[in-house]
Length: 229
Image (cartoon, rainbow, N blue to C red; front, side):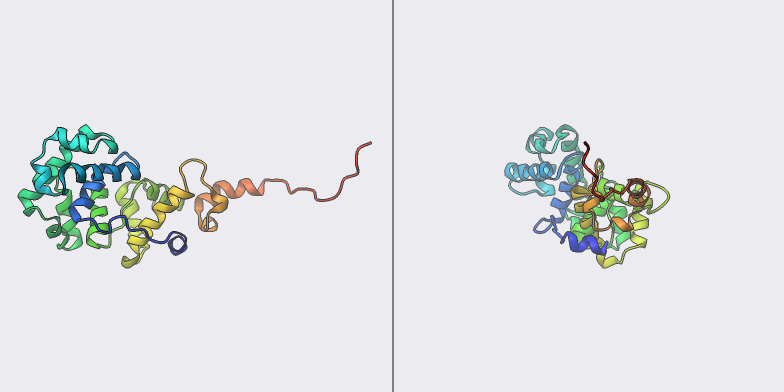
């Protein structure tokens, strides 16, 4: 992971965002691309001026859906965002930061009590907005963790626990971002570019799948052959 951190310098997408914007952005990111998630958040900013629990809780679902349509599944995400906003207003006086001030496990539990917030969303908000030492697991990280044989089970909590056991707390955020970048760039689900991978020699999947394939190749005969007559 240290090698990947050097290969992919940290690009903190949450810089300049409020904790609530990070939360909403993470909800928008479900089942869409990073570009469309960003467009959805910008749509909310254009429509409502500020992305706050107060403004979104008071909005109509249709208005939120129209603002976030770039992010996809707008009709499903809009009521989820409005319900989330109302819960934060009622339970936390509109301040996600109050949740993030709690110890990590307590903050995680509080976030997961909010409507539409699961383990991944909670961990992203904890790591990106609160500086908590969690290791969020997205589809890229889950795929790479399986290729690295991290943990026997492939469920979210098992992968997260395996990664947190193997990483120092202060490295989890940059390494989380580095592995995502690696998954988008080289270690793709289909046709991974193993020849360009800086950590392929330490990859269990590469040794098991790609390594034997290479060893079975017959070496080229470099001797000059006499021309046919």
